[in-house]
Each structure stands twice: as structure tokens, then as C-alpha cells.
Length: 297
Image 1: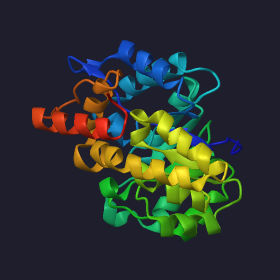
Image 2: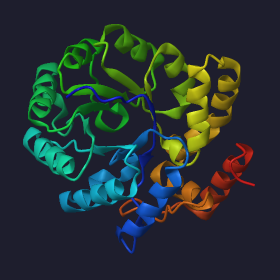
Image 3: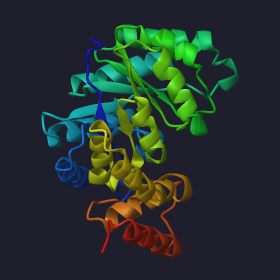
């Protein structure tokens, strides 16, 4: 079951809200617009999807909307990681029945002090054993404060139903350690556009990038150039993308990403409380960053 091709660029799509409810019509319209950009697929319920604010029922409804709206040639990856192994398995298989092709499983972290390598190995192995679709490990230590060693990832990479890892730290040294040690069929995906050039030239399979929500063609173009060995134009694109990536991830976060989407013809809308909408001054700064990157006239 592990034989799923994850090579390519995926946006971790935001969940659109209107009057604090999921706006399924706007979600479908966003999917339609992204589908023309050359992306490999969509990651639903990454950190940018505000998944911690969604109920299980809402998650299932969102997955159904994305699967129905996406072309059959594109992959839908569902973020199904929960704090308990039991709930992770349940949500993963619910999403599988709705058409998700793979599951992105974040490291449990609430009881961080107890999340030893043995506990994490048991968690991911059990989920993989019981999942109807391949799983992808999701390492995002800035939120979870959980770090997984390259040795542990290498061991998990041998499991027939663990297909890859999304690493959001962007540490090229760590990515290199992973590439050197994991199974040959295991895909390493970088989780930040700021490290895309370095990660792809090192041998990563692709990326799950917040910036791909607002600059999908630029991210895909960079990946294509690197694949073709055209490193100089790819390097220039990377430099052009840095400010955009910093704006929609580190500086302004999900509210800023949604502003950028609104400016570029997608539907971003407001985040779900307690997240607050971006302020006017922040919106002006984001608009200028998009102009400087050539994404907005």
C-alpha cells in the first residue's frame, strides 16, 4: 500500500469560513482555481487549515468537498493526526472512505514529556497498521515541540504503509540526514518554501508549502527548473519567494495568508476565533510584499 507517488508541490490549504461556519462553496472555488497551477494535490488540515478548530464532523465534510472538487488526477491528503492513537485511526479511515488518498499524521504532543521515541514509534506503527490509506509523518516542532530523530524516521520508513514525512523545520542538515537513511521508497517533503531550493537540490521529493496557496505557479516552476538542472533561474525564484513565504508563515501566519489569498482572487476570509483577522496596517504590508514579488499589479 506504500506505493504512492508524493513527488511534487502541495499547498496546505486554508479552511474558508463565513459567519464562523465552513464556506464549502468558496472552498470548492479555491480548489478549482488551484487545480490549474500544476500542483500535485492538496493537503487538507495542515497547520494552515486551522484543523485544531474543526470538529471531526466538519473535517469529514471538508474532505468530501475537496475530493468532489479536485480533478481525479490530483491527490488529496488529509491531516488526521489526533492526540490519541485510537482517534487518529478512526479519523484516518473516515477520511479514506470519503476519498482521501493519504493521511498526514502529526506527532502527538499534549503529554510531550511522555512522547519518547518508543511511544512515537508505537503510535505511528499502530496507525499505519490499521489505516486503509498510506500515512505521512508530520513533523512541525514549532507547534508540537516534539523532535523525531533521523534514526527513528529511518526505522518508520521501512513500514510498508508509511509513505513519507513532511518536515516543517526546514533544517537542510536534518533533511540530508533523512535522505541518507530512509527507505528508497520513502518520500521526504519539505514543509517551508524558504528552504525549497536547498531541499530539492539535496534530493527531497517535493514540498508542502504555505506559499503554494498564493504563489503556486512559482513554487511549481522552481521544482521543475531544479528537476531539469536549471539551478540559476531556480535560485532567483527562491530569493523572490522568500519575503512572500515569511509573510504568510512566520510574520502574519494564517490571518496573513488569508489576506494574501483575498488579494490574489481566492477566498481567504477571516480565521476562526480565537485567531483574529489581520489589521489594516498588516494588510497593506502584505499587499506590498505581493507586489514586490510580481504576484500583484
